[in-house]
Amino acid sequence: MWLRKLADWAASTAAPPPIGLELRPDRFALLHVDRPAAGPPHILGHARHRLPSSDPGAAAAVLHDAWARLALPNHRVVVSLPSPPARFTLLPTAAWMKSGAAAIWPDITAGQWTCVARLLPGQPARVLVGAVPNEALESALTLLDLAGLAAAQVQIDVLALLTAYRHTPAWTGDTPLARLLIHADDDGYRWYRLSPTDGLPEATGEATHETGGFAALADQHPERVFLAGPAARVRTLLTDLQATLQDVRFCSNPFAGLPLTHDQDRRSLTAQAPELSVALGLALGAHR
Amino acid sequence: MSQGGDLGNAWALLDLAEPRRMARLRRVRRFWLLLAIPQCLAVSGMMMVRAISPAPRVEIVQPPGPPPDNMEGAARLRHWQKRREETIALFAMLSHQLPEGLALTSLKQREAQLTLTGMANRLEALPLLEQTLTRQSGYPYRLRREASGGFAMARPVQHFLLELSKHAPKQEEGPP
Image 1 (cartoon, rainbow over the protein chains, first blue to last red):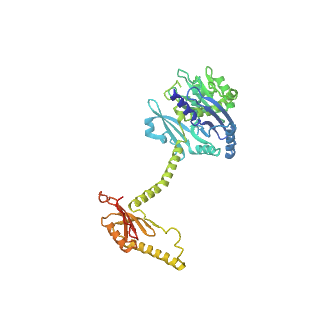
Image 2 (image 1 turned 30 degrees about the vertical axis):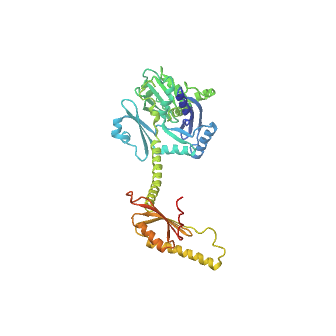
Image 3 (image 1 turned 45 degrees about the horizontal axis):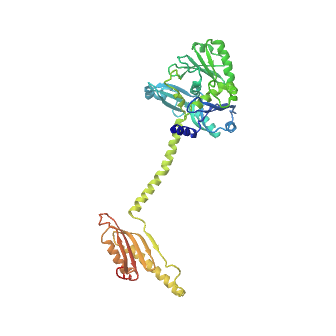
């Protein structure tokens, strides 16, 4: 019993978990989550604001203000990079040993890209490879520096979305489902088919908001569709998809099953859920 | 996640900033190493040199208080000059006539007493030094001579202490 007490005490004195921050050139969304050792995570606070994209100094000031206003206890953040500049893939270990990242993506050059590989457990062992252009990484980290924040981890936003939806009941079905993850941004949207064996996304296609592209989506025959991105975009996309795809369940709110510390936040969280879901995934997936 | 549960949430641990952080850590570590290595070498070298030949500690103790008040100006000056010449002669003698195989570690000169400590690596060096000093310096009497058991215990160096005096030592008044 005293061992349990000691463990609880150690957990309570440990550094607070980093804050999930989805940082884009023109906006940011942040989410402060408490992750107790047992039980579901608690949402402590959230914010989203526009950033003046032309002036890094002013953008840093806005970020700093948001931190001061919410009185956040931690200056360590987990940020993500969007997946068109960033790339990721899953390889068998042997293939990775033989060829490395240069053979997978012949167009990336060593000096201008940062490449990371992480060995995943399981049988057979596989390697998750991510790559990002140094320029994109540099600009994100510089903005954080200006705002007085420190990046504890830099993640890819589609992978963060997977973490966000782990707590959604619709995601955790018992039978294998054909799942589709749609990530919208200001120009268009891209969709990822989730592999039924390992749950990792494969980039399947992209479309702009004008052209639609729902026919290609319907060809995937999804049973579950998860949506994320700016709320207005997701809402219109959702109505269009519901008209096209029948017998499909849609989910755009990963906060549905999560307890809140302040229950009055529920309404605003639900309204902003699609655009906070990347930040949620970042906060939940941060290193302990 | 029950579907494909073998992976769990492992992809959440991907960190694109990791190589950058590692490179920075490496840079910092290399910087401190480069900063520390020459100083460590210098300190250990100095310690080794000092262990072989320690710097002698020289102390010349003036008599406590000013010279006697009954001395007038010229006598005071003569008294001071005489002491100074004695000291210079002693130093000259020690620097020229120190027997081979001797190293002094300290020298303390008092009004009527001279104390020397040092190391000897020859058996005959210490008696030779004593002989030279009692004859030529102004301290003809031996008060004390002590030496560590260096040669007796098959060690290469013998530490010694030599105490000389200007005046004959008082005779012991029988056993207590």
